Length: 256
Image 1 (cartoon, one colour):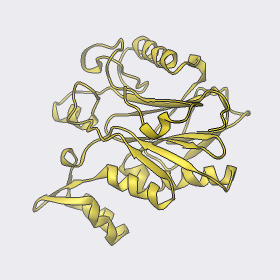
Image 2 (cartoon, helix red, strand yellow):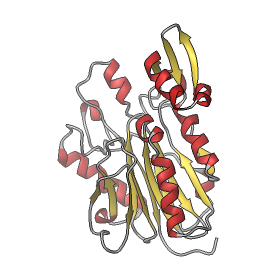
Image 3 (cartoon, one colour):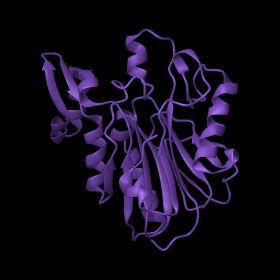
Image 4 (cartoon, helix red, strand yellow):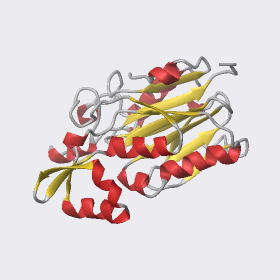
């Protein structure tokens, strides 16, 4: 379990970037696999999600998840749709107390946000596709549509580290063709391969949007005992992989 020092200061926020430890799943999913889209036993995944709900101190029905597809789609949870259990998006935003927002990842970047001024929370799933197509900008836009005066804090959770994220030259060219300044997110490995700094790419987008950022700098690929990793499962020729979960909820109104 990993926490943001900045978010910890707010008494009306419960949050956690959960590791893979302490759950019920077996084999390659050992043990706190929260990926409903994985091939793991549905019963075990549900037991894991129940456990997460208890830890975050909310009813399981109040834990809201997403069908994540690496899109730039953001959904605001309000009184009309708050009973839905899953949302077709890669970010969810709400002002409703007692609802927990969950993001599942296995190398992609989990981001949880809190607008201190207006008491709004959000969870973002940001892989390179979602991040480059505007998921972060679209989420902050939703915050500002709800209220234009904000003080937004973001915690960037465990994700794949730069030295673990090897990419081919066509990937690099795709990013640099969008903007030459994207060159700063790559370091050369050898002629046809580079390393991509996904965390910094995401971090800088948030900073440019005037968000106060905190990083939990753990590498999901390297830390096998702590995190699931899509890329590591591919290297090991496994036919599937587990997902870690990151959660935020507002518990009660506070003046902080």
